[in-house]
Image (tube, rainbow, N blue to C red; front, top):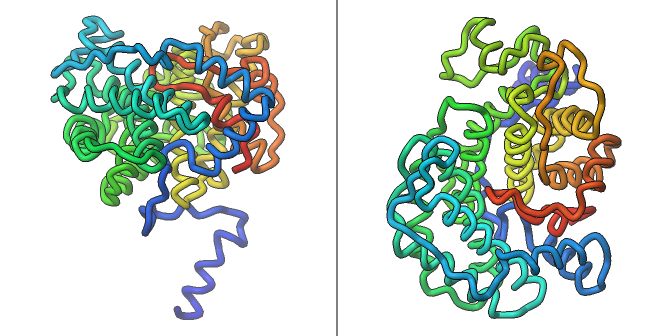
Length: 387
């Protein structure tokens, strides 16, 4: 490297900036490595077996849920049809909940060593991989993202910690043909859609060890995070996703639900409601966690800053702070949901960053359960988890 190029390489550091590296799939993927790693699972197992809180209460909550029922009957179908707000709902709820159930069973298997739960997770995954061919109607991309986020979490745990899964290859084919093909190219709908779709794409790429899809999904994820959470360093207007077609101030304000004043931590859907905002925040944190397991820690980059600000901003109002007149015309629709634990653990437990409002809300909502879409058991897997 020439002396000139060496000096140029130092400029970001001298200015206090952190360069964002181009995404690069790991040379060797870590398994299990979607949302939870083996060290994280070992930490949880030790805490639950010791009866320590809040992990024991979170485990009991998962075990008592319908998702953990050993008598659960899977309800696969060839074509899952989901319209707007799941109307019509032909297999939408069944698919999402069977996927969450498989993940729940996989967690219980690892914690307890009870093979019945591993076998139940396999039965659920096998039932769907034998039947499903496609998703249709207007909500198909979102539905595929939601279910496609849960399936690889379960599959990673089972494939790499249980002794036998004869149909794992068929399941992998299902993930590639039915799910990855639907989500990998994204969409220009509301941000939580594409963030969930990229969560599915990243998780599936890890399971398939598909480096090309991994890199493509991570690139789109980074662009989406930057366009979903505003930082004052963005300038007068939020960033936009390349190819979105949003070019004027009026278009951007309309896309941001009519909000024209932008502050750190505001999201593209804050003025819609905090429930959908929570979906976006959860997906941002989930992908960041998977990337960290795979060797790329984005929490110390722009992604982590946006996640921290989004968590703090939304938590403040979810806790009851008065809504100023400039924010969403003075009214917020609350309902953030059980979505803060993963990001809070990464930024507070591991990095030591104080997050007062997020901490208060996270601890108040423990044990965090499931939103019945793609979020499940975050207190169990990520509360104060240093692994």
